[in-house]
Amino acid sequence: MDIFERTELLLKEANETSISSAEELEKFRIRFLGTKNVLKDIFAEIKTVPNERKKEFGQLVNNVKQTAEEKFAALQETFQNNTAGKDADIDLTLPGDVVTIGARHPIQIVKNQIVDIFKRLGFAVEEDREIEDDWHNFTALNMPEDHPARDMQDTFFINVNPDVVLRTHTSSVQVRVMENQKPPIRILSPGRVFRNETISARSHCFFHQVEGLYIDEDVSFADLLQTLDFFVKELFGQDIKIKVRPSYFPFTEPSAEVDVTCFICGGKGCNVCKYSGWVEILGCGMVDPKVLENCNIDSKKYSGFAFGMGVERITMLKYQIKDIRLLSENDTRFLEQFKKNMTATTKLSPQEQVRDAFGLLK
Ligand code: DAH
Image 1 (tube, rainbow, N blue to C red):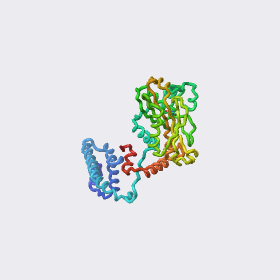
Image 2 (image 1 turned 45 degrees about the horizontal axis):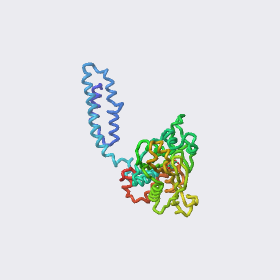
Image 3 (image 1 turned 120 degrees about the horizontal axis):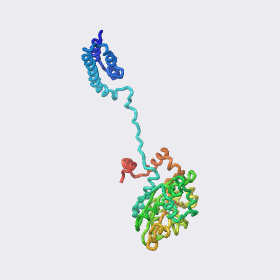
Image 4 (image 1 turned 90 degrees about the vertical axis):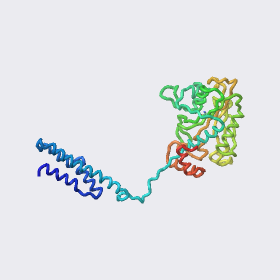
C-alpha cells in the first residue's frame, strides 16, 4: 500500500468510525487529534512523496484532519450533555457542600455597640495611626521623658529610634484631634493598641480601646458622669449603676475609674467581680489644662473630659469569655459558638443575619 492509499484509508476510518460513548469519542480524539496522532506519523513521511505530488498529499492529510475535527466537535456536545447525571461517578443523592457563613467578630460587635451609643450623643468617629511618635503618645499627654507613668505602659519601639512607637493607648488620637480641630470637639476613637506584656488569659500584647473626648466651653465633671451613666445603662442594661473612684492619669485632673454593678451576679458577689459586686470598666477625667495648651487650645476658655476603655475587657465581661486569647486567635470553634449564642438571642431574621454578617444591614 502506498502512502496515498494509507492516507485514504485513514480518511475512510475518520468518516466511518462509529462512536457511541464518551470513552469511544476520547479514543477517537487521541487517535486523530491527540499530541501523538496518526496524521503526524504519516505527514512525517512526506519526504518519500515525489515533489510534484507533495501538494496533493498535503491536501489529503488536511482533509483527514478536518474531517476528524468536525466529527469530534459535533459528537463532543452530544456526549458532554449526556454525561451529567448518567455518569456513575456522580451520585446526585449526596448532600451538597455546606457553605458556612461568617459573622462579625465579637470585638467588632462590641466596638459597634459602643460607637452607636456615643453617636446618638453626637460623638463623631476619628481613627488614626497605630505607629505613633513620642509626642502624641506620651509628651503631649503630660508624660515627659522620665515620667514614671511611661514605665507602666511597656512600650514597643520601632527599630532603634526611641521616637517611633506602637501606640500604647488611643489617647494619642486626642492629641491629634485637638491639634487639628477647633472646639467644640466631640469625638470617639476606637482602635488597636500595643503593649510589651506577657500573653496570658488576662492580658495580651495587642488589644483594642475606645477613647472619648469632649471639649467645649463650660464642660464639667457632672457632664462626664451624666454621659457615662447614660452609656453604661445603654450597654449593659437600665438597672446597672456606676461607681466613680478617684484615680490618677497624667493627662486628666481630676481622674477617676468607673465601676459598674456586676451584671453577672447583679451586685451580690461572684467570682467575676471577685465578690465585690462591682467591675471596673474604664478610666476618665477632666482633660488637664496643660494638655489643652500643648495642643494649642485656650485652657482659660475651654474645658473638657476624656475617657478610655478596653474593648476586650468589656467583651469578656459582657459575654463571659474567660480567656482574652480567644479574641485574637480566630479559632473557628470559638467563633462558631459565639455566633450561635448571639443568634440565639438576636431578633434578626435569618436573612437579616446574613446581611449583618456582610455589613449590609442598616
Ligand atoms: N489611656 C488610658 C490607658 O490606656 C485610659 C484612659 C484613662 C484614657 C483616662 C482617658 C482617660 O482618656 O481620661 O490606660
